[in-house]
Each structure stands twice: as structure tokens, then as C-alpha cells.
Amino acid sequence: MPDDPRSSEPVPDPAPDDRGSAGDRRVSGRTALFVAAAVVLAVVVVVLGILNPRPPMGVTTDRLGPAQGEQVEDYLREARASLDGADTDPHWALVSFTDYLTAQQIPAAADGLRVAGVIQHVPIDRVQTPVITVATPAGNEPAVRSADAAAGLVAAQRFRDQRSADIARVTEARLRAGCACTAGLVVRGTLPQLRELATRPGVRAVQALPADAIAGRFAVAPLLPESTGVIAPTPDDGPVPAE
Image (cartoon, rainbow, N blue to C red):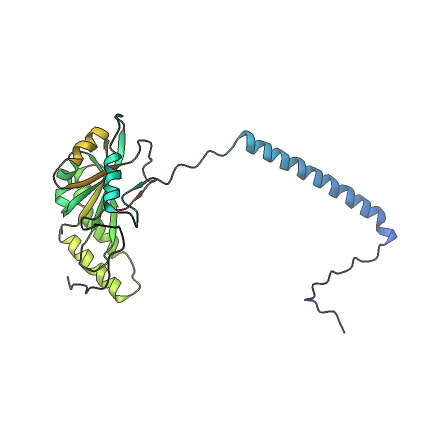
């Protein structure tokens, strides 16, 4: 019976041929040289790696806002503690409000600080609506237009089912209509400025990152005005309004 080609048995080497012994020695010699060269190259690469190590990656674990499962009161204490310090360097910070604001109210709420991001969220009882963080260039106008920008981001999405599409439709419509849907701001200011901002009416919390935090290298999660107790996903079993 012929051998099964799928067999895992090793195939025996062919019988040695005296006529090929000189050639085999030449091939073996070249192989040995190649192996030696490869070993030397590997050693050089290792040495270069030790002498010139890769620069460490930037810290990417900085975070603004509460984590899922965190107690709101714990987060509020952490936010207050983050404003302690005597340095006067600018810090990135998250400003959370007691109530939602309209986009027109953002410049006054920022109290002159540079607004780098606006968190928009359309609150609907027992309906999970998206949280959209809009990056904004310097100036009041981009912040005021952040609701329209958020509406455009929602409109550009594709949705897996009819409920998701309905939620997107009402979210876009309310943002474009100028709803009070601004849940928070990402700002940049010194610790004295941020402490002053934290005392303003309507400001629920201000949390600052260390001064060496890098723009675009930290996560942002909102503290929504309605969040109490433990931070957790909201129910999504209510009817979606028509508009």
C-alpha cells in the first residue's frame, strides 16, 4: 500500500552519494559562514538596542471624569483634591455642571478659560442617548457651534436597528434646535483659575490633570447632571419620543 502523504512519520534521508561529498563539504562550509555572520549581526543588533533603547511611550492612563462603577461622592472628593497645589502651570480639566446648559451659555460658564472640548448629551428619560465630545479650537464661536457639530457627528453614523436610528434622529433634532444639552467642558487653566471656577454657581465639579498631561493623550468621561450614587449605564427601555 502506498504511503499516506498526510502521515506524520519522518521521511528518511536519501542514501549518501560519494560523488557529492566534496560539494556537500563546500555547501556546509558556506552554511557555517552564513550562520556565523548571522550570529555576529544578532549580537550587534542586541548591543545597539542596549546602547540606543527606544524612547518610552507617553503616559496614556490619564483620565478626566468618573469611572464605571465609581461612587459619585468618591469622584467629587477626588476632583476637589486634584485642585490642590501651588504650581501656576496650566492644567487640562473637566468642568461638570449641576444642570445642562445651552451652547450659548458656554462662554460665560468657562469664565474666560480656553475651551478645548464640549460634551453634548441629549437627556431622555430611560433612553440611552449618545454622549458626544466635540473638540473645539480657541475662541467662543467654536464652543457655541459645538451643538451643531455634535448633531453632524450623529447624523453621519450608521445604525444597526430602528431604535438606534430613532434615537439618533431625535438627538440630532434637539441639538440643532438649541437644547440645553451641554453636560461638561474640557478647559485649560492654572490651579488658581480652576479653583475659582469650581466656586461658581452651577458648577458641580472641576477635576484637573497633572500639569504634564498631554493633549489628546487622556480619556474623558462625563459626570452627567443626573448621575447620582454609582456611575452605571442608564436604562434603555423607555419609548423614543417623536421629536
